[in-house]
Length: 423
Image (cartoon, rainbow, N blue to C red; front, side, top):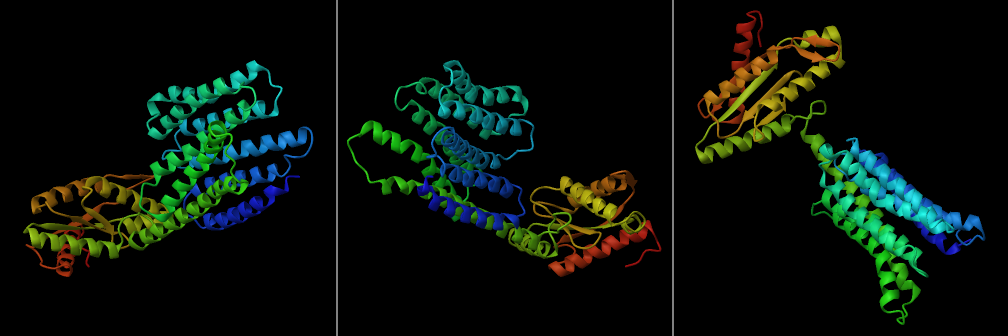
């Protein structure tokens, strides 16, 4: 057995365990894909323990180790693609994983016919290109075109170098691994363009991981007489650990941002909650005071929500609230704020520039939208709404007075609809 790989295996197992513990508490699906990638890296080190076993078992241990290493990087790369749910995305993943699974055994195991190796090397570039051309209309994310631009030149390089006497196999294998992990570097840079420790460490780690497959062959080819201690060549293995630490930091950073978002947003609808609503309203009024402009506040109360909730159940009521939230967001500008400020009550802050006439147009539009039946699964329900408007500074000069004025106008509107209604 190759006992020199045992310390690395132990270290990666511990890192993967730490990663699994953190990813289990993560709210994102991406962490599960990363975890599968780290399982592949653990399998790589485990398989390399047996590469010195004589005969076919040692050879196939090397094959399993190299395929696992390439697959792990491919999964890391695919996890950062923004639209993984599109049909072309899993097909691109399957194309890359499949071509690697075909080519590496033929390359490393030896005794493969030249035509088989040539065909396998061609598939490395042709399969991703075929997916891109087949899904041309839906193939918009630029990262997938990056895959095509990476693997087509790689395929050509493999065809040129793979049959070279002496080091052709090693150069071809290094080219595959460099392409995979440099692709990870590009994908993570694209997806995590933010000035945080997790992003910087992960991207730098993938770059170091990729360069290890280039530096050693270049040193051997250009300066064969230069002797460098083996410990120096072990330093690039630090890339494994740097990437793992960076990914853990990314998960922690995302979790912190998620927790901040939960503290300021409604769990059910995703709208601003009362705390964020009060902050936004205070900021909007302060800006309007400085600029001498107006701010309009709309209070929206659903008329028949209680009846729907009581007669059809809370599940249908929750669907109604989500759909109403989506309708409100779709009607206002991005600079405006829609908040859920009560069980069936919503507030809309129309920030500057605005006016009473503009607010009335928005109110009429919302009343029209909410007067139409909502399709909630198998149910079609009528919700209806009452909307009150208050404008700063005409109706009130501070946030509390403005909220009270809008609330009173809303109840006036509700009373006109149903004279028996009262605050």
